[in-house]
Length: 126
Image (cartoon, rainbow, N blue to C red; front, side):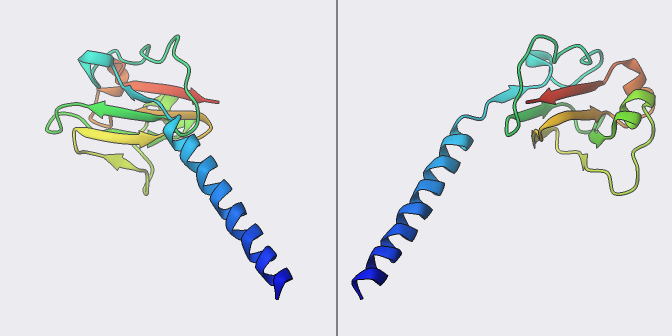
């Protein structure tokens, strides 16, 4: 019986340690307002320059939801400003929060002409 008690205690300690580490990672995430005070608008494609992002950081897209949207796209979709593929994640609230994945994350506005006018960003998260 005593061995079973020690084993259970070790499991509890292990679970608690995992919880603490997960909370530390979440608490360490930064929140970035895309476009700073100007929000998600035209010519924001240079906004990420000089900023350091990591996986788990949150991008906040603030914009007029009657005029714009935010779409997560592939590298090819970003480069060509192509209409998003079926099943693409489209945000339309005007105050969208997107958690960054490791690697390069691409976002465009899918309203015709907006992406071509610089309403797109590529954010690389370490």
